[in-house]
Image (cartoon, rainbow, N blue to C red; front, top):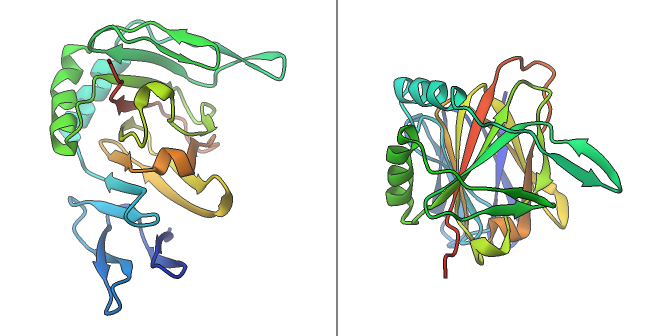
Amino acid sequence: MASYAQAFNGSGWRSFGGSMIGDAWQRTEDEAGHSQLCLFNDPKKIDVALLDYPEPAIRHFPNYLSPREADDLFSALLGLHGWRQDCINIYGKVHPLPRLHRWFAESGESYSWSGIEMRPEPFPVSLQEILARVSSENNVKFNTALGNLYRDGKDSVAWHSDDEPGLGPNPTIASLSLGATRRFLIRKKNQHKQSMTFNLSHGSLLVMSGSTQVEWEHCIPKSASCAEARINLTFRAINQS
């Protein structure tokens, strides 16, 4: 299925067609100096979606991990004990979260959101090499990761931004996907028609940086056709000062 990326060229939004999976987008400039996206056909390289250059920006690596690396990591994480399901209070009613989750941290940083307090656990050996690699390649010292386990297509996450105060202004978030492919939707907070869709596949990495979390929000919708599990890890740099 074809999908479309949009880039702000100084005078308005322009759409660029193509497949976001297996194709890659690269920023160039036209003769007038306007930013635009170009497609190049190497699935091992990066897909770049510049939402309104220079910030915010999304980088998508469809084949960040090799199939063997992705398979091994998915099996190791799926087999960990301690995946939990919490409840959330919405308009006075308590609902179970439609997914399981856990919180990894290097130095004991806890994580609180919507009344849920998540106590940290150390990064397992299976994640330590990936943590170092993602940190080095993005020039960010990631020290925590939120793990979400989507048991099947009935599990989801609603529209939100990763903008907790502890992440500081304009945080970089690196999101690693394992298992079943799921749709990732992102839209501008004040203009929902400005949106994009990515299919996040096994072993892919999505990096959101700049003011993405300030100006945009994202979700993983339910999928009636998905019967397999997916694990997502969002690496974050928590301010320890």
